[in-house]
Length: 448
Image (cartoon, rainbow, N blue to C red; front, side):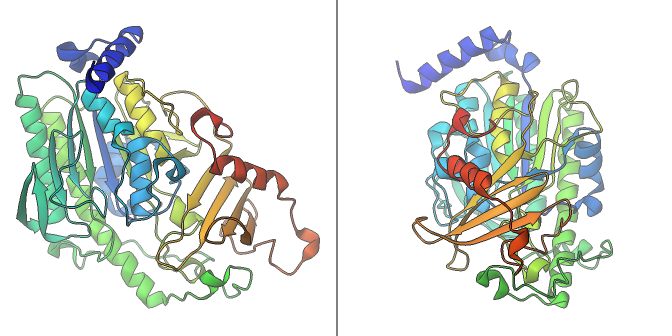
Protein backbone atom coordinates (compact mmCIF):
# COMPACT_ATOMS: atom_id res chain seq x y z
CA UNK A 1 0.00 0.00 0.00
CA UNK A 2 1.38 3.47 -0.91
CA UNK A 3 2.07 5.80 2.04
CA UNK A 4 -0.66 8.24 0.95
CA UNK A 5 -3.18 5.41 0.75
CA UNK A 6 -2.13 4.19 4.17
CA UNK A 7 -2.61 7.64 5.66
CA UNK A 8 -6.01 7.98 4.04
CA UNK A 9 -7.07 4.61 5.38
CA UNK A 10 -5.82 5.59 8.82
CA UNK A 11 -7.81 8.83 8.64
CA UNK A 12 -10.98 6.98 7.61
CA UNK A 13 -10.61 4.66 10.58
CA UNK A 14 -9.96 7.56 12.94
CA UNK A 15 -13.00 9.41 11.64
CA UNK A 16 -15.14 6.32 12.05
CA UNK A 17 -14.06 5.92 15.67
CA UNK A 18 -14.83 9.61 16.28
CA UNK A 19 -18.28 9.26 14.76
CA UNK A 20 -17.37 11.32 11.68
CA UNK A 21 -18.00 10.48 8.05
CA UNK A 22 -15.36 10.69 5.35
CA UNK A 23 -15.45 11.84 1.74
CA UNK A 24 -18.47 13.56 0.22
CA UNK A 25 -20.45 13.55 3.44
CA UNK A 26 -17.64 14.96 5.57
CA UNK A 27 -18.38 18.57 4.64
CA UNK A 28 -21.53 18.37 6.75
CA UNK A 29 -19.82 17.02 9.86
CA UNK A 30 -16.28 18.40 9.65
CA UNK A 31 -15.43 22.08 9.37
CA UNK A 32 -13.73 24.14 6.76
CA UNK A 33 -10.55 25.57 8.28
CA UNK A 34 -9.12 29.06 7.86
CA UNK A 35 -5.80 30.09 9.43
CA UNK A 36 -4.72 33.74 9.08
CA UNK A 37 -1.16 34.61 10.13
CA UNK A 38 0.22 38.15 10.25
CA UNK A 39 3.93 38.98 10.35
CA UNK A 40 5.55 40.75 13.33
CA UNK A 41 2.25 41.79 14.91
CA UNK A 42 2.62 42.19 18.65
CA UNK A 43 -0.16 41.83 21.18
CA UNK A 44 -2.26 44.91 21.90
CA UNK A 45 -2.51 46.09 18.29
CA UNK A 46 -6.14 45.31 17.49
CA UNK A 47 -7.31 48.88 18.03
CA UNK A 48 -6.97 49.57 14.31
CA UNK A 49 -8.68 46.29 13.32
CA UNK A 50 -12.41 46.58 14.15
CA UNK A 51 -13.49 43.87 11.70
CA UNK A 52 -10.92 41.42 13.05
CA UNK A 53 -11.94 42.18 16.62
CA UNK A 54 -15.62 41.75 15.84
CA UNK A 55 -15.46 38.71 13.60
CA UNK A 56 -12.84 36.70 15.46
CA UNK A 57 -12.09 38.02 18.94
CA UNK A 58 -15.64 39.02 19.92
CA UNK A 59 -17.43 36.22 18.08
CA UNK A 60 -14.83 33.66 19.05
CA UNK A 61 -12.44 32.87 21.87
CA UNK A 62 -9.52 35.18 22.56
CA UNK A 63 -6.43 33.59 24.06
CA UNK A 64 -4.89 35.96 26.60
CA UNK A 65 -2.02 35.51 27.07
CA UNK A 66 -0.84 33.70 23.96
CA UNK A 67 2.74 33.08 22.89
CA UNK A 68 5.00 31.82 20.11
CA UNK A 69 7.66 29.30 21.06
CA UNK A 70 10.39 30.77 18.81
CA UNK A 71 10.02 34.51 18.06
CA UNK A 72 11.28 34.47 14.48
CA UNK A 73 9.32 34.20 11.23
CA UNK A 74 10.23 30.82 9.74
CA UNK A 75 10.71 28.77 12.92
CA UNK A 76 7.38 30.06 14.20
CA UNK A 77 5.56 29.30 10.94
CA UNK A 78 7.08 25.83 10.85
CA UNK A 79 5.71 25.29 14.35
CA UNK A 80 2.28 26.38 13.13
CA UNK A 81 2.42 23.91 10.24
CA UNK A 82 3.73 20.98 12.30
CA UNK A 83 2.66 21.49 15.91
CA UNK A 84 6.31 20.95 16.87
CA UNK A 85 8.92 22.95 18.74
CA UNK A 86 11.75 24.22 16.55
CA UNK A 87 14.18 21.70 18.05
CA UNK A 88 11.95 18.98 16.57
CA UNK A 89 10.93 20.39 13.18
CA UNK A 90 14.50 21.58 12.46
CA UNK A 91 13.81 25.05 11.02
CA UNK A 92 15.77 27.22 13.42
CA UNK A 93 16.52 30.34 11.35
CA UNK A 94 15.00 32.19 8.41
CA UNK A 95 17.74 30.80 6.19
CA UNK A 96 16.35 27.28 5.83
CA UNK A 97 13.14 25.96 4.30
CA UNK A 98 13.63 22.25 4.96
CA UNK A 99 10.20 21.77 6.48
CA UNK A 100 9.38 18.15 7.43
CA UNK A 101 6.50 18.04 4.96
CA UNK A 102 5.31 14.59 6.00
CA UNK A 103 4.45 15.95 9.45
CA UNK A 104 2.51 19.06 8.42
CA UNK A 105 -1.17 19.63 9.05
CA UNK A 106 -1.68 20.36 5.34
CA UNK A 107 -0.32 16.90 4.50
CA UNK A 108 -2.71 15.19 6.91
CA UNK A 109 -5.64 17.32 5.79
CA UNK A 110 -5.02 16.72 2.10
CA UNK A 111 -4.57 12.99 2.67
CA UNK A 112 -7.77 13.13 4.70
CA UNK A 113 -9.82 14.48 1.81
CA UNK A 114 -9.54 18.24 2.37
CA UNK A 115 -9.01 20.67 -0.48
CA UNK A 116 -6.03 22.79 0.56
CA UNK A 117 -4.80 26.28 -0.30
CA UNK A 118 -1.96 28.57 0.80
CA UNK A 119 -1.72 32.27 0.05
CA UNK A 120 0.91 34.89 0.83
CA UNK A 121 4.12 34.33 2.73
CA UNK A 122 5.25 30.73 3.09
CA UNK A 123 8.90 30.36 4.22
CA UNK A 124 11.50 33.08 3.58
CA UNK A 125 14.04 30.85 1.84
CA UNK A 126 11.53 28.80 -0.13
CA UNK A 127 12.34 29.26 -3.87
CA UNK A 128 9.44 31.07 -5.49
CA UNK A 129 9.49 28.73 -8.50
CA UNK A 130 9.07 25.67 -6.24
CA UNK A 131 5.50 24.57 -5.67
CA UNK A 132 4.47 24.03 -2.02
CA UNK A 133 3.75 20.36 -1.20
CA UNK A 134 0.32 19.20 -0.03
CA UNK A 135 -1.59 22.22 -1.36
CA UNK A 136 -4.09 22.03 -4.22
CA UNK A 137 -4.14 25.80 -4.81
CA UNK A 138 -1.63 28.48 -3.95
CA UNK A 139 -0.51 32.05 -4.50
CA UNK A 140 2.90 32.41 -2.87
CA UNK A 141 4.43 35.88 -2.78
CA UNK A 142 8.06 36.88 -2.48
CA UNK A 143 8.69 37.72 1.21
CA UNK A 144 8.29 41.30 2.41
CA UNK A 145 6.42 42.46 -0.71
CA UNK A 146 3.85 45.24 -0.47
CA UNK A 147 3.32 46.40 -4.06
CA UNK A 148 3.22 44.56 -7.40
CA UNK A 149 4.38 41.33 -5.84
CA UNK A 150 6.13 38.49 -7.60
CA UNK A 151 3.92 35.43 -7.15
CA UNK A 152 3.83 31.73 -7.85
CA UNK A 153 0.16 31.18 -8.68
CA UNK A 154 -0.64 27.48 -9.02
CA UNK A 155 2.75 26.84 -10.60
CA UNK A 156 2.87 29.96 -12.78
CA UNK A 157 5.37 32.74 -11.98
CA UNK A 158 3.82 36.14 -12.47
CA UNK A 159 3.71 39.67 -11.12
CA UNK A 160 0.30 40.62 -9.76
CA UNK A 161 -0.24 44.39 -9.82
CA UNK A 162 -1.58 46.23 -6.81
CA UNK A 163 -1.25 46.31 -3.05
CA UNK A 164 -0.28 42.80 -1.95
CA UNK A 165 -2.73 42.59 0.98
CA UNK A 166 -5.59 43.47 -1.39
CA UNK A 167 -4.32 40.96 -3.95
CA UNK A 168 -4.34 38.24 -1.29
CA UNK A 169 -7.89 39.15 -0.29
CA UNK A 170 -9.07 38.94 -3.90
CA UNK A 171 -7.30 35.63 -4.47
CA UNK A 172 -8.65 34.16 -1.25
CA UNK A 173 -12.21 35.09 -2.18
CA UNK A 174 -11.71 33.63 -5.65
CA UNK A 175 -10.43 30.32 -4.28
CA UNK A 176 -13.22 30.08 -1.72
CA UNK A 177 -15.74 30.65 -4.51
CA UNK A 178 -14.12 27.97 -6.67
CA UNK A 179 -14.15 25.52 -3.79
CA UNK A 180 -17.84 26.24 -3.25
CA UNK A 181 -18.68 25.69 -6.92
CA UNK A 182 -16.72 22.47 -7.11
CA UNK A 183 -18.66 19.24 -7.48
CA UNK A 184 -16.47 17.85 -4.71
CA UNK A 185 -18.31 18.34 -1.42
CA UNK A 186 -15.16 17.87 0.65
CA UNK A 187 -14.26 20.61 3.16
CA UNK A 188 -11.39 23.02 2.56
CA UNK A 189 -8.33 24.29 4.44
CA UNK A 190 -6.87 27.73 3.71
CA UNK A 191 -3.67 29.15 5.20
CA UNK A 192 -3.31 32.87 4.50
CA UNK A 193 -0.19 34.75 5.62
CA UNK A 194 0.17 38.49 5.07
CA UNK A 195 3.37 40.48 4.71
CA UNK A 196 1.91 43.11 7.03
CA UNK A 197 2.94 44.49 9.40
CA UNK A 198 6.53 43.33 8.70
CA UNK A 199 9.17 45.76 7.41
CA UNK A 200 9.22 47.73 5.17
CA UNK A 201 5.72 48.46 6.57
CA UNK A 202 4.28 50.30 3.58
CA UNK A 203 0.64 51.31 4.11
CA UNK A 204 -1.89 51.55 1.32
CA UNK A 205 -2.26 55.18 0.13
CA UNK A 206 -5.71 55.55 1.67
CA UNK A 207 -4.20 54.71 5.06
CA UNK A 208 -0.85 56.48 4.64
CA UNK A 209 -1.88 59.33 6.94
CA UNK A 210 -4.61 57.56 8.89
CA UNK A 211 -4.88 58.33 12.59
CA UNK A 212 -3.54 55.66 14.92
CA UNK A 213 -4.26 55.28 18.64
CA UNK A 214 -2.06 57.45 20.88
CA UNK A 215 1.14 55.76 21.94
CA UNK A 216 1.62 55.31 25.65
CA UNK A 217 5.10 53.78 25.99
CA UNK A 218 5.53 51.34 28.84
CA UNK A 219 8.19 51.76 31.55
CA UNK A 220 10.35 49.30 29.56
CA UNK A 221 10.70 51.92 26.82
CA UNK A 222 12.11 54.40 29.32
CA UNK A 223 14.39 51.90 31.04
CA UNK A 224 17.31 54.10 32.08
CA UNK A 225 19.49 51.44 33.68
CA UNK A 226 20.10 48.37 31.52
CA UNK A 227 23.22 47.22 33.36
CA UNK A 228 21.36 44.05 34.38
CA UNK A 229 20.68 43.09 30.75
CA UNK A 230 22.91 40.95 28.53
CA UNK A 231 25.65 42.84 26.64
CA UNK A 232 23.93 42.25 23.28
CA UNK A 233 20.85 44.04 24.62
CA UNK A 234 22.84 46.86 26.20
CA UNK A 235 24.52 47.44 22.83
CA UNK A 236 21.22 48.35 21.14
CA UNK A 237 19.61 51.76 21.04
CA UNK A 238 16.23 52.89 19.76
CA UNK A 239 15.14 56.50 19.41
CA UNK A 240 11.57 57.35 20.39
CA UNK A 241 11.03 59.14 17.09
CA UNK A 242 12.09 56.11 15.06
CA UNK A 243 9.99 53.77 17.14
CA UNK A 244 6.93 56.02 16.93
CA UNK A 245 7.25 56.06 13.14
CA UNK A 246 7.72 52.26 13.00
CA UNK A 247 4.66 51.77 15.19
CA UNK A 248 2.47 54.07 13.11
CA UNK A 249 3.46 52.40 9.84
CA UNK A 250 2.84 48.94 11.30
CA UNK A 251 -0.62 49.90 12.48
CA UNK A 252 -1.50 51.47 9.14
CA UNK A 253 -0.57 48.30 7.26
CA UNK A 254 -2.82 46.37 9.65
CA UNK A 255 -5.78 48.46 8.53
CA UNK A 256 -5.56 46.70 5.16
CA UNK A 257 -5.29 43.32 6.89
CA UNK A 258 -8.52 44.23 8.66
CA UNK A 259 -10.13 44.91 5.28
CA UNK A 260 -8.93 41.48 4.13
CA UNK A 261 -10.55 39.78 7.13
CA UNK A 262 -13.81 41.59 6.46
CA UNK A 263 -13.86 40.58 2.79
CA UNK A 264 -13.17 36.93 3.56
CA UNK A 265 -15.86 36.69 6.20
CA UNK A 266 -18.33 38.50 3.94
CA UNK A 267 -17.71 35.88 1.27
CA UNK A 268 -17.99 33.04 3.77
CA UNK A 269 -21.34 34.49 4.77
CA UNK A 270 -22.56 34.76 1.18
CA UNK A 271 -21.50 31.15 0.60
CA UNK A 272 -23.29 30.03 3.75
CA UNK A 273 -20.07 28.65 5.22
CA UNK A 274 -19.41 30.91 8.19
CA UNK A 275 -21.05 28.57 10.69
CA UNK A 276 -19.11 25.52 9.56
CA UNK A 277 -15.67 27.18 9.45
CA UNK A 278 -13.05 26.97 12.16
CA UNK A 279 -11.12 30.23 11.86
CA UNK A 280 -7.86 30.99 13.68
CA UNK A 281 -5.99 34.30 13.73
CA UNK A 282 -2.52 34.96 15.14
CA UNK A 283 0.90 36.43 14.40
CA UNK A 284 4.21 34.63 13.95
CA UNK A 285 5.92 36.80 16.59
CA UNK A 286 5.86 40.25 18.12
CA UNK A 287 8.21 43.22 17.72
CA UNK A 288 9.78 45.62 20.17
CA UNK A 289 8.69 49.24 20.15
CA UNK A 290 11.70 50.55 22.05
CA UNK A 291 11.41 48.28 25.10
CA UNK A 292 14.89 47.77 26.62
CA UNK A 293 16.29 49.86 23.76
CA UNK A 294 15.11 47.36 21.12
CA UNK A 295 13.20 47.71 17.88
CA UNK A 296 13.52 44.20 16.47
CA UNK A 297 12.70 40.59 17.49
CA UNK A 298 14.36 37.27 18.42
CA UNK A 299 14.74 37.95 22.16
CA UNK A 300 12.72 36.43 25.02
CA UNK A 301 10.97 39.50 26.47
CA UNK A 302 7.19 39.64 26.53
CA UNK A 303 6.73 42.09 23.64
CA UNK A 304 8.44 39.64 21.30
CA UNK A 305 6.84 36.34 22.30
CA UNK A 306 3.28 37.51 23.08
CA UNK A 307 0.91 37.71 20.10
CA UNK A 308 -2.78 38.29 19.33
CA UNK A 309 -4.54 34.92 19.02
CA UNK A 310 -8.22 34.04 18.56
CA UNK A 311 -10.29 31.06 17.41
CA UNK A 312 -13.86 31.04 16.10
CA UNK A 313 -16.06 28.03 15.35
CA UNK A 314 -19.81 28.64 15.78
CA UNK A 315 -21.50 25.94 17.81
CA UNK A 316 -18.19 24.62 19.13
CA UNK A 317 -16.37 27.64 20.59
CA UNK A 318 -18.31 29.96 22.87
CA UNK A 319 -18.32 33.50 21.42
CA UNK A 320 -17.01 36.43 23.41
CA UNK A 321 -14.91 34.29 25.74
CA UNK A 322 -11.35 34.66 26.95
CA UNK A 323 -8.99 31.74 27.55
CA UNK A 324 -6.02 32.26 29.92
CA UNK A 325 -4.28 28.90 29.59
CA UNK A 326 -1.13 30.02 27.73
CA UNK A 327 -2.00 29.00 24.18
CA UNK A 328 0.95 28.83 21.76
CA UNK A 329 1.58 28.45 18.06
CA UNK A 330 2.40 24.75 18.47
CA UNK A 331 -1.23 24.21 19.49
CA UNK A 332 -2.65 25.18 16.09
CA UNK A 333 -1.92 22.00 14.12
CA UNK A 334 -3.28 19.70 16.89
CA UNK A 335 -6.40 21.88 17.11
CA UNK A 336 -6.97 21.85 13.36
CA UNK A 337 -6.52 18.09 13.07
CA UNK A 338 -8.75 17.43 16.09
CA UNK A 339 -11.51 19.52 14.51
CA UNK A 340 -11.10 17.57 11.29
CA UNK A 341 -11.23 14.23 13.11
CA UNK A 342 -7.73 13.33 11.97
CA UNK A 343 -5.18 11.62 14.20
CA UNK A 344 -1.55 12.38 13.22
CA UNK A 345 0.77 9.42 12.83
CA UNK A 346 3.11 10.77 15.54
CA UNK A 347 2.32 12.87 18.63
CA UNK A 348 2.73 16.62 18.31
CA UNK A 349 4.33 18.91 20.89
CA UNK A 350 1.26 21.12 21.10
CA UNK A 351 -2.24 20.24 22.30
CA UNK A 352 -5.69 20.75 20.84
CA UNK A 353 -7.31 23.94 22.11
CA UNK A 354 -10.66 22.17 21.77
CA UNK A 355 -9.73 19.95 24.72
CA UNK A 356 -9.64 20.88 28.40
CA UNK A 357 -6.17 21.20 29.90
CA UNK A 358 -3.93 23.70 31.65
CA UNK A 359 -0.40 24.81 30.82
CA UNK A 360 1.39 26.07 33.93
CA UNK A 361 4.49 27.18 32.04
CA UNK A 362 5.53 28.21 28.52
CA UNK A 363 8.79 27.15 26.89
CA UNK A 364 10.49 29.35 24.30
CA UNK A 365 13.74 28.81 22.41
CA UNK A 366 15.91 30.52 19.83
CA UNK A 367 19.09 29.89 17.86
CA UNK A 368 21.64 32.61 17.10
CA UNK A 369 20.35 34.88 14.36
CA UNK A 370 22.47 37.16 12.12
CA UNK A 371 25.30 37.03 14.67
CA UNK A 372 23.41 39.52 16.83
CA UNK A 373 21.94 37.33 19.56
CA UNK A 374 23.24 34.07 21.01
CA UNK A 375 21.26 30.87 21.46
CA UNK A 376 18.77 30.99 24.31
CA UNK A 377 15.95 29.10 25.96
CA UNK A 378 13.41 30.28 28.51
CA UNK A 379 10.59 29.16 30.76
CA UNK A 380 7.88 31.52 31.92
CA UNK A 381 5.17 30.92 34.48
CA UNK A 382 2.49 33.23 35.81
CA UNK A 383 4.98 34.42 38.42
CA UNK A 384 8.36 34.54 36.69
CA UNK A 385 10.45 34.29 33.55
CA UNK A 386 13.84 32.59 33.56
CA UNK A 387 16.21 32.78 30.55
CA UNK A 388 19.46 30.98 29.78
CA UNK A 389 21.79 32.20 27.02
CA UNK A 390 24.32 29.74 25.60
CA UNK A 391 27.51 29.66 23.58
CA UNK A 392 27.48 28.41 19.99
CA UNK A 393 27.25 24.69 20.79
CA UNK A 394 24.98 25.06 23.85
CA UNK A 395 27.71 23.61 26.06
CA UNK A 396 27.92 26.61 28.38
CA UNK A 397 25.49 29.12 29.88
CA UNK A 398 26.93 32.59 29.23
CA UNK A 399 24.22 34.76 30.82
CA UNK A 400 21.00 34.34 32.78
CA UNK A 401 17.92 36.45 33.48
CA UNK A 402 15.17 36.10 36.07
CA UNK A 403 12.17 38.42 36.38
CA UNK A 404 9.30 38.34 38.87
CA UNK A 405 6.48 39.04 36.44
CA UNK A 406 3.82 39.85 39.00
CA UNK A 407 5.93 42.56 40.61
CA UNK A 408 7.86 43.48 37.47
CA UNK A 409 5.70 42.85 34.36
CA UNK A 410 7.97 45.07 32.25
CA UNK A 411 11.06 42.95 33.05
CA UNK A 412 13.07 45.88 34.36
CA UNK A 413 15.00 44.15 37.13
CA UNK A 414 16.97 41.02 36.41
CA UNK A 415 17.40 39.60 39.90
CA UNK A 416 20.43 37.55 38.83
CA UNK A 417 22.40 40.65 37.74
CA UNK A 418 21.06 43.51 39.85
CA UNK A 419 24.07 43.60 42.19
CA UNK A 420 22.08 42.28 45.16
CA UNK A 421 23.14 38.71 45.95
CA UNK A 422 20.63 38.32 48.76
CA UNK A 423 17.64 38.36 46.40
CA UNK A 424 19.01 35.82 43.91
CA UNK A 425 16.29 33.23 43.33
CA UNK A 426 16.79 29.48 43.34
CA UNK A 427 16.66 28.60 39.64
CA UNK A 428 17.37 24.90 39.99
CA UNK A 429 13.88 23.73 39.11
CA UNK A 430 13.59 26.23 36.23
CA UNK A 431 16.93 25.08 34.83
CA UNK A 432 15.77 21.46 35.06
CA UNK A 433 12.58 22.32 33.17
CA UNK A 434 14.52 24.06 30.41
CA UNK A 435 16.87 21.10 30.11
CA UNK A 436 13.93 18.73 29.82
CA UNK A 437 12.06 20.91 27.34
CA UNK A 438 15.08 21.31 25.06
CA UNK A 439 15.16 17.54 24.48
CA UNK A 440 11.46 16.73 24.73
CA UNK A 441 9.03 15.52 22.09
CA UNK A 442 5.27 15.07 22.29
CA UNK A 443 4.04 13.65 25.57
CA UNK A 444 7.55 13.69 27.05
CA UNK A 445 7.40 17.49 27.30
CA UNK A 446 6.89 18.76 30.89
CA UNK A 447 3.28 19.47 31.71
CA UNK A 448 2.02 18.07 28.39
